[in-house]
Length: 350
Ligand code: PGA
Image (cartoon, rainbow, N blue to C red; front, top):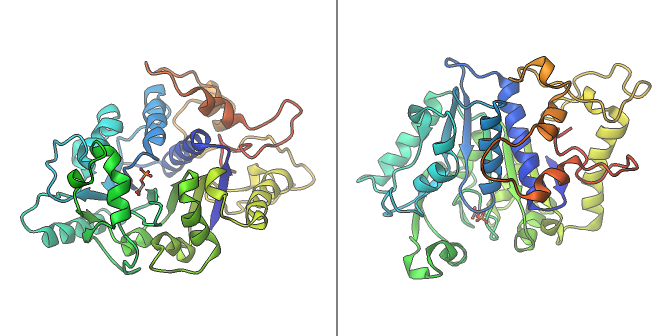
């Protein structure tokens, strides 16, 4: 597992969105070979979606051959309700990009036969060849999607009763009234997440620090369903400093040092997007710490930029909404004296 630590939620969102963009572009999706994603709701991914929309508007990312599966949906809430996950996904992402309506998969929390609806969802995922990248957030109780404590680690899409802690946490979206929060949801299972070829989790805030510690430092446990990522061959957690508060200092230093070794000793030009060493030629002798990593299949033309990283960092925002100020400056992560900061590779993960 890779743990990427960034200064704050803005830097986490920018890093994550850049990673997603590079993965999609590197994959070079076509109609016959689409890029299939699992996508979360919640407050954590909102800024990630903002950046993805922005990348689309800049012309450096297209969703034309992307298929999306939402992770979950409340039971019994009308689709048109502003807090349904259907509304959420449209509001924050789908209405602003070139994703085809037929490529949007969502759970129907108002289906007459909820069990059949869940089975249908699993079949749809299989029919499109499985999920390539599952982007997820977690709850303070360590749930991934709505897989509350005690969920089977082999579970698939099903109806789930929400934990009281989750109902309380989500009351903020329903005017603070716990009575208005649906108590049941349809959710992909822990097994569904595990079956994805890659899992990318975003975890921010001190209120999720215990869950992150359980995920990283303790064993795989159904009471902290996020910990199952330890069993995944290709999992990455991107968190902010606040979320690391319950981790041992040694753990934090360890994961930061791995990034520095990759950055400073191996050289990011030698490392693939998902962290594999793609070549070692001249790794140490000819090391150029700031050399860009070319992105296979990137959509921008060669004369636009000499590197994908610089294109991500330097391209002007074209959308009408101004980006949160720190989200761009944090992403550079290089001090004026050239020393690497914790956000040193925000524009290019490695
Ligand atoms: P949050 O929710 O992003 O709003 O914290 C995440 C979750 O409960 O899965």
